[in-house]
Image (cartoon, rainbow, N blue to C red; front, side, top):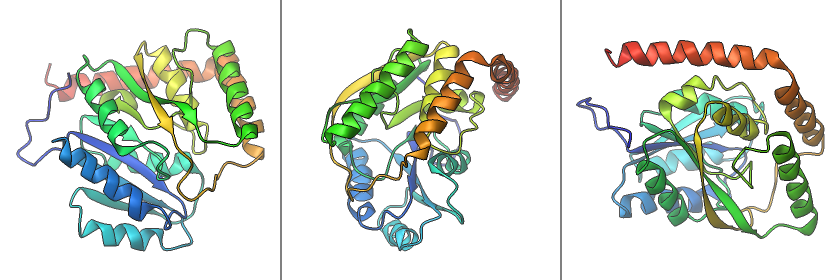
Length: 263
């Protein structure tokens, strides 16, 4: 179990980054559900809601919700550069010992998110917790693409212990996510996290959940993303240069953590 900070300032139990791109139609439902579920379970949640370059009233809706939920933090990205960019901009604002990534679309019930946190919190900390959407209310074409994608990733990394690579939320210790030196500013961020966790020797804890339809019925993944997925997956697998950079960054972060802990 990861210990809490000794700071006099109240420290949240977990921080979630929620990238929101034109989500004004749904966040008035999903954000309160998530905040209330953690409160009712006795956990302190810090939710960093990133207005990821939205052109609608997403930022205004988040600002309105802040009056109800003190643990809600708003961060604005002026120009949308991808899902991953919104997440990466939000991570440095997280204060808790556990950092999670969660979509704004409400595909996973808030109570299941709480269960996932309670599962990882009971471990020794060398774990990446995530959901596996076993029952997904998606169109048949999307299901076929998803199965093919997950089979490809498992073929490239047979020991990667996950059947739903992009399943979110994901929860990771703060020190581990720093050491990952994440770079992907688009939808490749999910497999990057999984692959780097695999090379770091982290245990993958996967919780089966019911995957609901997106709250607003819109996916921001386009056809061009498929080609990028394939290109970068093969780059991750067969190019040694990123692994050398990753190992160097991991060693540097471990040294920082060593000094911060006063060992």
